[in-house]
Length: 242
Length: 336
Image (cartoon, rainbow over all chains, first blue to last red; front, top):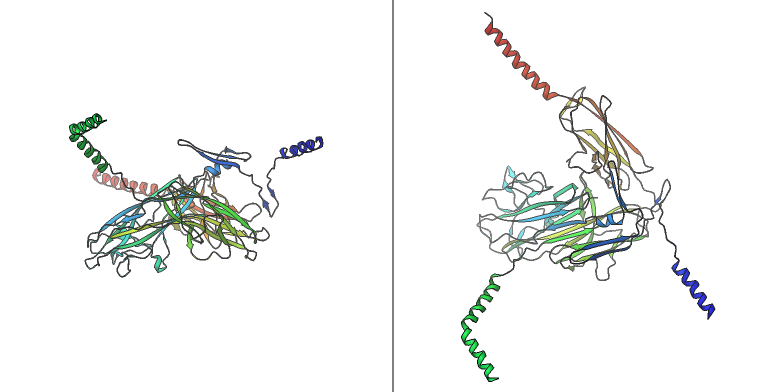
């Protein structure tokens, strides 16, 4: 009995006397092995009024500042970086009912947020032109006013003629292409069904917190346009740069 | 009991008009108090936005992503696509198709790649992405993006478009058996963007002009490079200013414009690496020193420009000319 008790106490001593493990960076001229700290005990605790995040295990976690330098070291800083966020204000854009020679417009707001300093791009493409469900009738992509004011997927041009028909978009706000010089300047969307590559509509090398743009969809149809329900899908793709 | 029933009947008879009126007001309140219907907002966030890693063939890594729905409930599909760099400003093109030779899958018990799942408002979803590099994978760089795309909703309007939002998080993989990487870069362009270019003088600016400097680095190696270094401005009186290059990844077979600033923080200069401002006079030299980390090659580049107060000289000449004419006329009038 005594022997058993001693053995148990001895074993327990070993179990609770676990020594700490330290990470170490090892390097030579050709290799660098980084033994990072292990983030133990990380947790998000929330209540109705508070949001508390905790991390544990980082050595030398602090904000270090010198002339011209700022180092934020520690899991908490990594943890607190605002993630890459992309928002489209409306998932369904109604352009109203078909009224020949009466342009109809609708707007959508695009918002990109990036924690710290980062780069991003937003590209757009349509899943085919506006078309009826059976696909027999389409509203073609705009060519803007045409002739000297003809727009393409990568070049905006003026579209204010009531006799110029089609579907296109204009954009205003942050980090937009420079050819959208007025609210009357439009482009057609790149057509994904025609294997056209999505076109970048927002791009920045420098995003601190938030970038916003407003995209205006416009259609104008002729009297010969067939009655029907015309729909398409616009795909906005936001990716951070590298 | 009978008495109570009589009282109740009496009460209803007496106040019947009032009760009916109250009921109508109550119903009306409900009718007019219709809550607003908001457009369906799509708002997704993903972290981390970039993973850059070196991995040996035959190894597997697991990366935990946090996907958060900050908008209305939405159906999301997670998939992986290839990435190709475009342009000089860090632009990327997504290449749909198989991700060969690298294998991706989700370790989540209830989720799979390319299979839609519902995300409620404010829901956070951890995506455990397992990246497997098969044994026979050739050494080199492989670039991908983890895409989370929403399912577009239908509209009843005659003319309508549905929007689909896709958010990506980039994955830069360097596959190497030995741990060695082929880091090799070249200065593709380093010069000022001149206002005038004169023979024997070279790049000429007005003293008050802002002077744009461009530095392009091209990746001629087989792995991603991250240039670091400085751009130094040296004046003819020995004055010196140092600008730190902001490290940016340059993928293979691509070049990128580098940015530099005194603080090492990103600035808003478009299409130039550095925008020098001040009052310049005489001959200036620009020198850049670039390396790609400890034990790598160092690149050097030089450029120069001359600055004169051209505008001031033109204005002074014009003024002198006017004064000269006025004096001449004055002399003509005063002489007998």
